[in-house]
Image 1 (tube, rainbow, N blue to C red):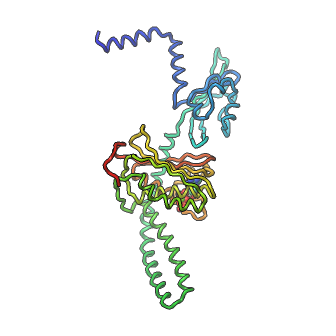
Image 2 (image 1 turned 90 degrees about the vertical axis):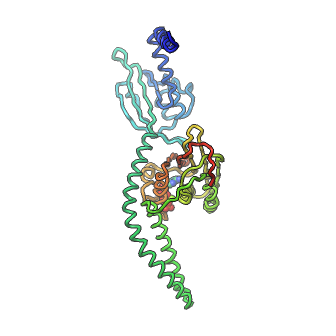
Image 3 (image 1 turned 180 degrees about the horizontal axis):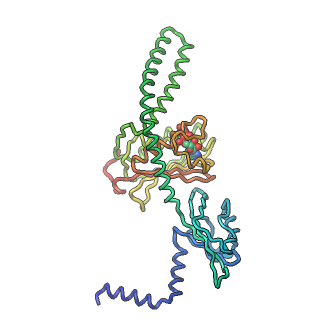
Length: 379
Ligand SMILES: Nc1ncnc2c1ncn2[C@@H]1O[C@H](COP(=O)(O)OP(=O)(O)OP(=O)(O)O)[C@@H](O)[C@H]1O
Ligand SMILES: [Mg+2]
């Protein structure tokens, strides 16, 4: 017998010696330890017989303290807004794919629940509920939808922005001439009016520029650069804005992270927009933490997190905030996040949001082309 055959023979004889019950028992223990699926096993009194690792980690608390607790009491104790299932599950009210949105701390998870009644001789003896974490799948679907919407808006934006920019350039030019003429004649009051018109035109011009970004009409200059350097350059601007709002800024750089391929000015715009949003969300006071992360487990990605201690984002805003012109602010254009999304999308990265009443975290991730190896480039 060669080595391989003897190994296979060994497995086979081990399997034969294992009784069916022992086999199922081993499977159940392993199942209860799985990270991406949670199991809640209930007895005929709706009390918890077993609760798996994933559920304890997600909702908090120790397994031992939950064993024997009625399931409805457990759901209240972990702070579920509405109980996703009740005692009717014991009487045959099985369910499939029941959605549960869980926001606790700064985790924001979308779960799908399946519930089944356990019968013996036709009599209910308990029930079980499976918790599946589908957040990543839904997040991916949402990213694809956002990109599709942006592409369509981009096409409209391209045409409109050019049509606006041409006459705008002429108007600004003539206004500047008028300004000069008024200055020569010392007509100060009229000059002030023209000053206001020019400032407003500047705002329109800024808007058109953002519009052109949405439509991808601007040439981007891709170079290898370190995110840490980009963040350091914009930090004075962010700190200034924070000062005005009494916000504390904490910046945690990550030296030695690999470079990313990006347009420096566009990346600055992304980080500035996210920083500005975080500061604006907090009103007066609060802390903005900007953290660079580079996970050793995911060498191909560089992440930057923007954590605020604001009130969080309500679900109806969460669904629309990446849409161009969606804003909840009196002075907002609603283009900030859609432009960020466009820029990051084009770099092959993504933006993820996690929010709760304790604050919001925006995470920008970008691909690191050299997969995390040290690079000779340092821009
Ligand atoms: N960190 C955050 N906390 C709470 N709400 C946020 C946060 N970031 C964004 N939002 C919400 O998303 C909306 C859209 O943001 P976006 O940056 O696109 O536009 P805006 O900030 O309203 O306008 P502009 O960026 O032109 O100033 C905001 O109006 C706000 O309601
Ligand atoms: Mg904004």
